[in-house]
Length: 231
Image 1 (cartoon, helix red, strand yellow):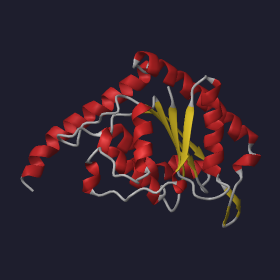
Image 2 (cartoon, one colour):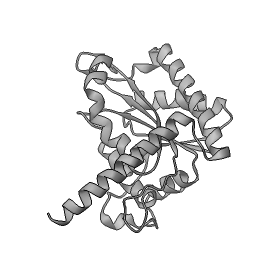
Image 3 (cartoon, one colour):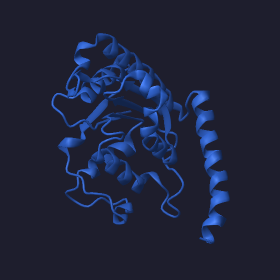
């Protein structure tokens, strides 16, 4: 019953990696195995339409991510926010995941069967700016996983990850409150993953969210498909 944790931070040391470690400790507290990968350590081919084939080319480290994802009962992604977006190598991985997360016939139906997913974002903006506007910069990431059929259980944003004005660096190691919160969130995530692994179901509110998104997508598809035929 493993949980796959992907860390997109490239700095050493990395705020994203430290937060992911605290979250992973909470998952482990629930007796769940964690497989953590740093994307910077992997050699992954850039996405092209040829990569929609679920058979991975030899020598491509994405095959490891794909195999772990297919056996995982939960997924955690920890990433910095750079220039109003996530790092390009994370976006590439998300695009590559479509090879196994979308149906082979139409490439429009998610196959992740409600897989629990949680996101950890770290950035330089204050929390108020994130809640008011900056969260919009990451919607494409979370919506992609909804499209893939996953269920988003949480989004954490760690604000002001700066040593000083214009100086980025590791700060979360000196924030015991943030690390404790991450561990608590990891424990909650772990408990939900346990239930999902045993029963294939999620708490009612998450099931309703997933059904609502699926309904909106189906309605949107029915409206837009006829329009698209005339473009």
